[in-house]
Amino acid sequence: MDDTQRAEAMRRVKAKRDFRNHAAVYVTVNLLLVGIWALSGGGAFWPGWSIVGWGVGLAFHGWGTYADRPITEADVEREIHKGG
Image (tube, rainbow, N blue to C red; front, side):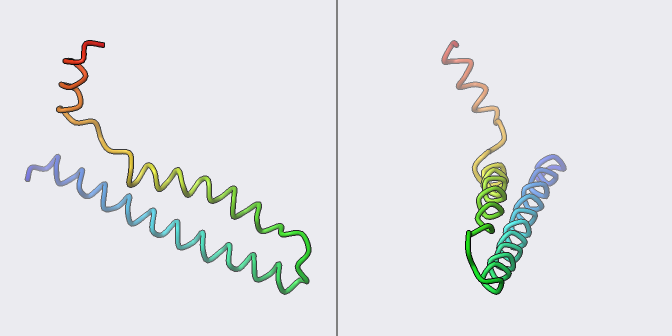
């Protein structure tokens, strides 16, 4: 394994760790907000704004971490041979 591969692997490990931390904070904070909502008598479910809004950001973070892969030489070659 060369230094470039090692650096890329380290970047991926860090990205996965960062996403897991982000997800843990998301769950913790939103559970706290739901608890405050419940203890304050319920009513309109205002924590939903945080859950949905932040959830969209978390989903994009997850996509960038797990689904979006780097461009490889094989991807470039395949595109060249497609011709357009």
